[in-house]
Image (cartoon, rainbow, N blue to C red):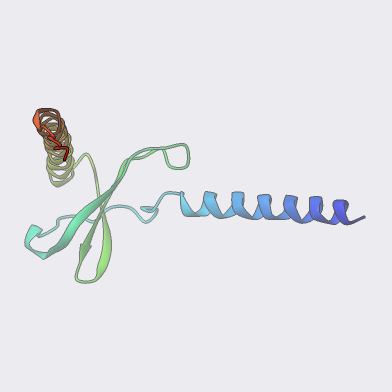
Length: 117
């Protein structure tokens, strides 16, 4: 009897978690895109949600005056944001590779000497 109750509760938990993930990953820009955006009013870094199974569109979300607004990825501003973000990702990847190779070189060239008494 206990195993049946545990199995039932496990099924309920699985269904609940699946329902939560679907609502969390749905499209964020359901109300459309803003028209023109003054880039000086944008606060912080834009958030980019790539297309996925849950939302087939690439979405760019910027914060303007404590409000989140959606920018059309096909607009001039959207293209600039996507281009800058891809450059930043490439630069991070290059710097991580360089740092890793420098660390490996330094660790391989260091010599440990021990003395015995």
